[in-house]
Amino acid sequence: MKKLLIILLVLFYPIIKSNAEEKNINRMFVGNPDAKITIIAYESLTCSHCANFHKDVYPQLKKDFLDTGLAKIEFRHFPLDLAAFNAAKISQCRNDGETEIYNSLFANQQKWVKGSSVEEANKNLQKFLNDEGFNIEFEKCISDKQIEDFVLNDRIEGVKNYNVNATPTIIINNKKFEKSLNYKNLKKTLEKLI
Image 1 (cartoon, rainbow, N blue to C red):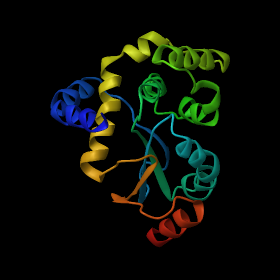
Image 2: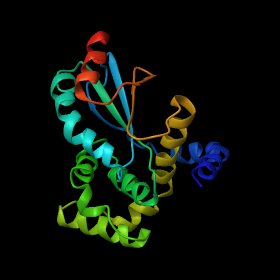
Image 3: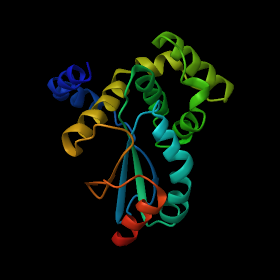
Image 4: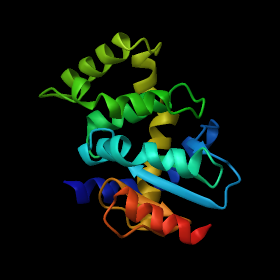
């Protein structure tokens, strides 16, 4: 089933790409936009390993490399299921480039990633957003074709350009990070690039 999805995405890539480019959608990133080091994180919002990255690795990475201007991180979407796909669209919906909703979805993953159907998962996601005070037009956001294409385009480009096949996948200055993803390994790699 995953292979069929990937084949369909690749076949429709030109259509998706042109639709996503009609509206200038801001990429979510943190750090110095002109930093020498660019980190790309391909993640799925329902991925527990991605949530662990945000809990265990990202805070120290932010403190040591992003807040100091040495690096920037771009968050790219690689949804592994429909719940993650809809959450990705929600995280992009304000189109402000900020990561507040994105980070909150990872930090509180257990509150909204549940349900036996997409409809139930969407209700849990919508309830979570309301409870957290995020003012989002839920139906409008998950139905926005240009944001949908933007999210799908991230996934397609991840596969085409970096052979992404799991989440999280970290790319540093256009090279796939192949070591075990913990802060110690990430720090060693980044320090060599300073």
